[in-house]
Structures are given as C-alpha cells and as structure tokens.
Image: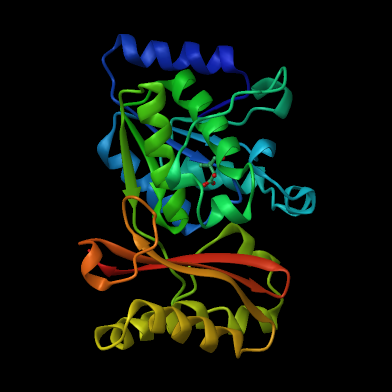
Length: 281
Ligand code: PAF
C-alpha cells in the first residue's frame, strides 16, 4: 500500500494505473476508520482493480470549530486497517495541500441540500461538495463509495456530480451497526459509557416506529419517535424528518412516494448522532 500526501503524486500514481486500463474505486473518508468504513473499502476491493482511500478531515465542511478540533484522528491505525483490507493507495494530504488558497466555490446544490443537515449545519454541504469534487477530479474514479448513514450527503453528492458533469458511479452502501443497533460512527468514541448505553435507543425506537407507521399517519409517526427519544435523559432530538428517499423533501402521506426514509439527528449529551431508516423502499 502506498501512502501519498501530495496531489501531484496522487495524480501520477492514478495515471499509471489508468495507462494499464485499471478500474479505480475511490472511498473518501475523514479517517478514524471503523467497520462501517471498512465495509466500503471491502466492497470497493471486490468491484475495482485499484482501491484509493482518502483520509482527510475536511475543515470546510465543519460549521462548528469545536467539532473540527475534537474530530478523532487515528492515522496510524487507519493505515493498518487499510493495509490489511488490501487498499492500494491511501491519500492523506495536509489542509494546505488541498486548499493552497481559499476554496470560494459555491455549488448550486438546490432543494436536496436545503433541508435537514443543510438547514441545521449552514455551509456543511457546500464544504462536502468542495472536497468531494476535488477528490473526484484528482482520481477520476469509475466508482465512488459512500455510506448510507449520511443519507442526505449521498443525494447532495449525486447533485454535485450532475452539476460538475463527472462520469462515475456513486455506490451507496448500507449502514453498519453495533450488535445493539447503534449506527457506527467515528463520533461514537466521544460518548461516555452512560451515553453509549442509551445511544442504541435511537435505532430501537426508529425500528419500533416501522410497526407504528403501518396504522398511523406520518405526523403521528414523527411524534412517536421524537417523544420517545426525548423522554430519555441526556437525549434531545434535533430533527426527525420523514422524506422522499430521492428528493429529501418531507412527505405528509405514506402514499406520496415509493421510497420513504426517516432521517434523525439526536444530541446524546454533546455528541451529535445521526441515523435513518427506510419505511418504504
Ligand atoms: O462522509 C464523510 O466522511 C465526509 O463527509 C466525506 C464524504 C469524506 C467528505 O469529507
């Protein structure tokens, strides 16, 4: 496995593989890798000749300085995991390498980016579009892999791909969970033991809501989830929205779409956790 830190070297390495007609899969990450990320890497390994994984904590997508400061960084362990998964190239650039000057691009991401995370984290998705578009133009992969835990992010990236005209496949991979249901996230390490014990209630209550939804309205299902989670000490729902799985716009009736997903953000103490569940697919 090659560890590359500059854009020039990355482009040269990729060019070399392309000359030999190799299919390249890219897995963009912010490091602090866990089994969720590794499931993307494993899938990329199966579907491509060459696997490139980027590890870069992208400052432009953090609208909260404290979150950026405390975001876990575990470079050495990330490299070990990637090496044993058969990754070919890990791209670990510095902030100066990616942003030698300020990236002032503003993407017209439209309605998919205006709701939920877009509404609660101003600028977040524009930052995601900035870094992912840079990575796509450096690597020009055939396939790029993203986890469905960040469900809305995938819709936003698809929109960015359309805007920029990238020719690649976005591969959406299912959420990986702990045995107790908690969605894997790099932020889980910040939970205290007590918070870690209660955090699985998010997935548990959303799963219970699948049955509730069968005989209740969308609005009542939202209330069901929000009230049950908010009743748990230390937990506070930031939003729970039930949306069309493609447009990310709220639905008010179960018949409004063939693909309906509930997307949640919950503060567990001061740790912001996100998750989602499909009601119809
Ligand atoms: O999902 C993430 O980890 C990040 O948003 C991504 C896609 C790697 C861009 O920094």
